[in-house]
Image (cartoon, rainbow, N blue to C red; front, side):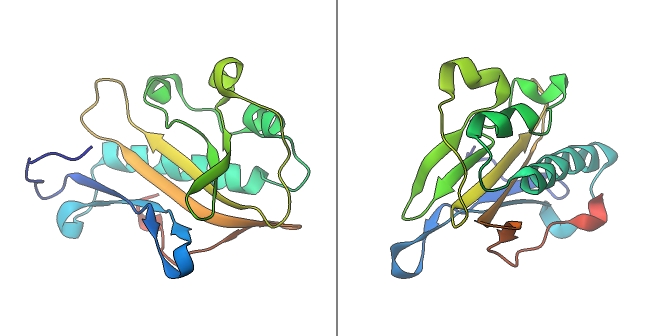
Length: 165
């Protein structure tokens, strides 16, 4: 979250766009970097690797015809140490704003899940936040994609920090 505290070199900085762009369509991606673009610590790399794994595992899993519940059940399992601080959903629709569907985590399905199926042509954001309860840092990653008959196609050229993996 935002505050007046000045970030220090080497700390993590997360950026989540949520911006309305050309012709009124929403663009929504998240990336995390270190302030000063310094090499991340081992702990920062561990957080980043988990968030990256979650986003990419779930992108690879998505397919037309899959139910929201099936996706939730098969999605990347968040390690217990990070579960309490999980993001509010594992994926959500995107168009003019954040839209239907909002797919609940398996642990939240009873209170926040609902029926539906993914369809080719849906524009989605695949989300991750990885940070331990009581921890001092976390990583937020999000990829905006269009779902095709062959899976997810990214809608951004904004790279991930793969050299951190």
